[in-house]
Image (cartoon, rainbow, N blue to C red; front, side, top):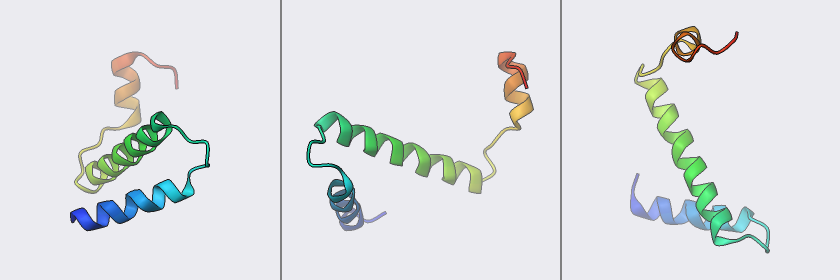
Length: 62
């Protein structure tokens, strides 16, 4: 993604945040967005695993 688009998106993110938002709030929003974007990229590229496989690996109940 071009840097100018990232800047524009950062400005939009800031505008949506409440006036009393902290740096930690802003950093958290960036982290969440980045994580979701990476997850979507992985999904589109077929780099996913079946939920039952993950549950079995970690012995999580269904």
